[in-house]
Amino acid sequence: MFFSRRAASLRRRLVAVALLSLLLAVGCDTTSTCSNESGASDASSCAAEGVKNVNDDKTNPTTETTAAAATATTTVTAEMAAEASSWSSPDAKNPDALVPSNDGYQPPPYDTVLEHSDFLMPPLRPGELKMLRFNENFYDGGKYIAQNYAARIGLPKHAMAVLRKYASDLGALDEMKRTHYHDPLEPNSGRFFKSPPAYSGGRELKWYIQRPGKHYDSDLHWFGCGDEWTHESFLRAMADAGLDAVLDAIGDEFDLDGLTIQGVGFLSATYGGESFMHWDWSNTGGRAFNILIPLEQVPGSGPELYVSDREVEDDPEGVDGEIKLHPSYGVLLGDDSYHGTHECDHRPTGKIRASVSIYLADLTPENVMMVASDPTAIFPLPHSYKWLWTQRGRHWGDGRSMADDIGRISWQPVDFWDDCAKLAADGQCEVSNAHETRNNCQVTCKVFIPDEEYQLGVPRSKIFY
Image (tube, rainbow, N blue to C red; front, top):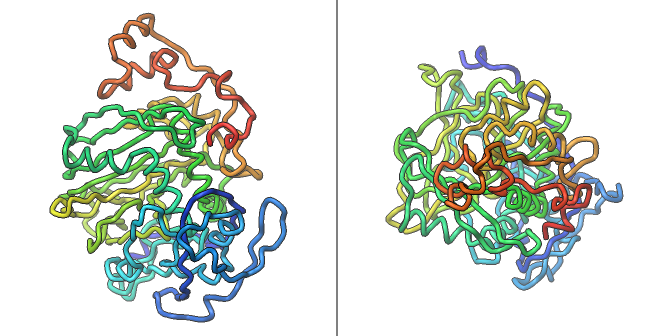
């Protein structure tokens, strides 16, 4: 019954990851295990595989993690970053062998993923993509894919440490906790806040906190970029986190032409009631996706996400499978991939659950307006398809990458209303739900970066550092 309602599984390939350099005071866990599809030990799955360095096309040797890397004060060098991203590393398939965060945060052990998930959850190498398949508890032995565009992708071992440091430097984690426990928003409202510089060349950044409507039975809040400067800053953090490996996996698996990250932000919650099952994309031709990466999880908590095999919202035969997230992988959700926040109540602990949410697409003339039509985000602005088209293929395809990103092509924002100056003076650029004002007063509200400030063609790493 289930198999007749699903297309055959898409092909899966392993992909190589680029050499990354970053500076972060952290240490490395050097314990190693490898697992097969069911999570059991399997020495054959640990076979070394060569990994190409896209900068010099030389094969990286399999090396043991150095003793210096095991100290808590070691700076992550280019070589260590490459080792953390390598498929042939001794710890490539040990999901708990992560570069630790410099704030002492301890993610849940991978055993909890196996305990709290209704899908096959083998550990993944960095950049390895596997479609989500139900385990033996479902459908006569399991192993059927949940959706044609629902998958897990292995993350570089240092991704969590870099993303948490970025969030910490911004003060975002503290702001999330303050918002949830002391100043929560009303449903369907938002507010701006400014953060210290981070990957911004010393420039203060702007964020927009918003809470969805009452159809979400939770206190979920979105912490999204408030302007193009902040968006570019987040892109640089993701480049240093090694997420080129993720784009490589998606582009290769789904045979795409190019990829653009058009939106990124943080999600956080302390409470969730009945899940609101929904998809983020439909009818894009399998060319638009959302990736969820856990940033902070509550110790001892259960699954955080549902992914469903349902074909329509009220599918009577649909099954909602549970997933426990882990910083060794991201969850990919594409066309018609129904999902929802799992029930939880972390309020007695005083802690939050937080994730990084990344929206990306292979933009085409046929889908660009659909991809740009998201009415919720404050950046990019709803229906800003002309700006979005200047980003096409920017981050993957034809040799492009986040690590070597030179930015978008030319774009000049416009004020469409005559009274923009007065509206800005009255604070209307930064009120709750200011989408319309910002869309019509793009220059005055400083939504986008003018070309003369953007420095077209200059590597982003020289501007956003």
